[in-house]
Length: 102
Image 1 (cartoon, rainbow, N blue to C red):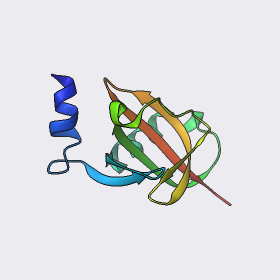
Image 2: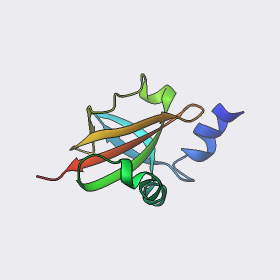
Image 3: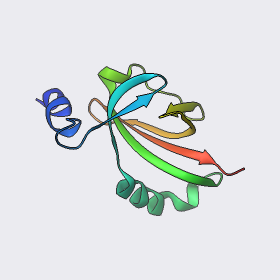
Image 4: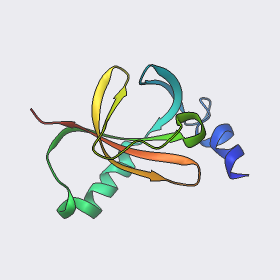
């Protein structure tokens, strides 16, 4: 049931999902800036580095493949972000991304 809801509700382009390019592959993702703000408040003292732009994206694990590694880079819509956190939430990856301050 959860697997169906991932595709048919949560990441459905007619509901919450949007098409984005991830490393040259079009995938349906959800970009959630409100959840990222809440997570930052919770872990503010534990954060390393300063990021100019931060995003939290949700993507189907089945569509994405193996989870990305924290500290690696992810290309999203032609921009590169450092992966600062990854969690598998019942078949959906939540991936926190930061664009490093130069």
